[in-house]
Length: 286
Image (tube, rainbow, N blue to C red; front, side):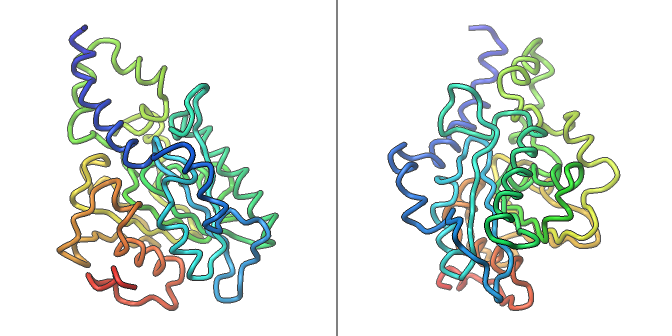
């Protein structure tokens, strides 16, 4: 095995660990969403929750398995909830978010239009995990999304890129490794700190006017690292560290979106700030 291929093995292992956690059996993927009550295009937003919520999965995730807990959580609270698949590669089922991120943002733009047309709402709220919390910013900035989106809530978003706990810093030392990542999984290459995609996305500021931004991070994140890269700067930004709310919260990059009801409570607060309540360790029971 070539030396650079050996060096990339930890990177691949870390990504696959996240994927295994997000993706159970294909049969469960096919059967779960309709029975859970989200992606119901007959749903009409209520006066209490007038905007549909669009859930945007992370790298190697998909529209069902990423949201098996959060979608029902929001649906139970009266929201019309939708989720999309994006960034598919040919011949790769279930593991999405690997295509070029600018193209994924175009898929998101089309999907938001579809949801707004079905619900009759003027704007949507977006909740994304990992890449799904960062990619919508391209839609907001470059594809007209700011006129159609009220709020963007990011769970462990890699807004300023990731070094995957330092592993990506090794890539320049192995000739051809970066080109291989870009050629085979451009969605991964786009997320490396300092990439051309992220440089363009963050040039001129992190936010656009008219959109409310919330970032929910965990200091135990092992994928979107260093975790402070997740934070945004801007006039309408709330950056939240879970451990400031509950020091006992040990969630890492995957669990924050799959099982962490403290994070879910913060999502609910961000979607309905007028009725927000304090998030504490006891929020796991709410």
